[in-house]
Image (cartoon, rainbow, N blue to C red; front, top):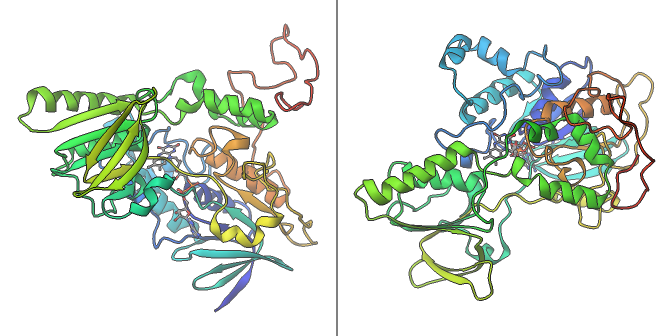
Length: 455
Ligand SMILES: Cc1cc2nc3c(=O)[nH]c(=O)nc-3n(C[C@H](O)[C@H](O)[C@H](O)COP(=O)(O)OP(=O)(O)OC[C@H]3O[C@@H](n4cnc5c(N)ncnc54)[C@H](O)[C@@H]3O)c2cc1C
């Protein structure tokens, strides 16, 4: 296998997180990076790229703008370069489609010149120069790593033996040779992906089931909380605030802020509600449905025809049986280290729950060596993208701060203040030492126990 030159950083995975890193890295002269992506082209959650799916954040939360608005890899530059800017503005849509953002990502991936497609990372090991990164095709040599391989689909254990054409995760919805038209379909989950799939089943050509059972463990289908003050939690100040907190406070915040990222967009809920009404009262169809709030998939088994699912409600003995042909698991994404990190796991500091101990600058607490004279970076550092929700808060898996996080990582990697990453205003006052109002000052240094904020 060919061995590559020594890179200052090899980034694993090229989703929006590491593509943002690659785009901002073009502003650091002399920095040698390679971004390894297993897919053969730039795609963004292709199994869920449903017609009409909308971006759930402002398009200015693109790869670069919130960290470096003059970087040429911005969405605005994409619109201008592709000649569509005026029509884009006149079309005055309330939200950009995910498909258009994927096209923008593909344009940027092509321009940055450091993304290597078709490179599935199988393992990573320590080496005198930093790390060796093994893919099926080559060994890459890196002083440092930036991990951005995303999060794998969470598949409930009781469904794993049945995975295949009839039972699959939402992540594979458009890729699976699915049978839904005229079939009995169970959708499990109450988040945005579940709702998008249900909407597609109700409206997509030839997709309408004969029966739809939609079970969500949530008590209902809560909308995405996209209100102004809630969005203040998607700012650098909020991330710093969260990182200073002890584990109990962090857990409380994550719980309280769940629907600022995991709710369903209100427009989509309205579309589904209206469509169910039409199907029930206006259209001439034999379609039947049951939407079950507070029901979890407890067991799954094969039936003579299709599958039988046991759905448990909130009360004792509150169970239903669903006999279906197709089961779609919109059950979210898991956390935890990717398989290729196995050779390093023993040395990576982790919390009791298995999550990495991650510093404020998104670096894992590993042993590093400073930059030798004439070099831009030290060696041995590992930074993580989209793997620190437990320590950095609700914004971590979201696009809102991907440019800011990449800027923090690049500053940390190079040991220089290449990008401004601090001192951005928020309306909530997240600073522990008082705020701009003279009437307010810090009362006391908080006690250093598990449930409080660390100074
Ligand atoms: C359907 C969907 C829509 C979303 N829409 C929004 C939205 O509108 N707004 C928002 O803020 N957030 C959204 N999110 C949440 C989040 O922004 C996205 O999940 C985003 O894609 C995360 O980016 P990422 O780069 O961290 O991970 P990913 O996008 O998952 O990218 C990881 C990449 O790593 C590659 N990879 C994995 N393993 C390896 C390996 N071993 N070797 C090489 N490459 C590997 C994968 O192929 C993939 O390309 C959405 C999530 C989903 C699932």
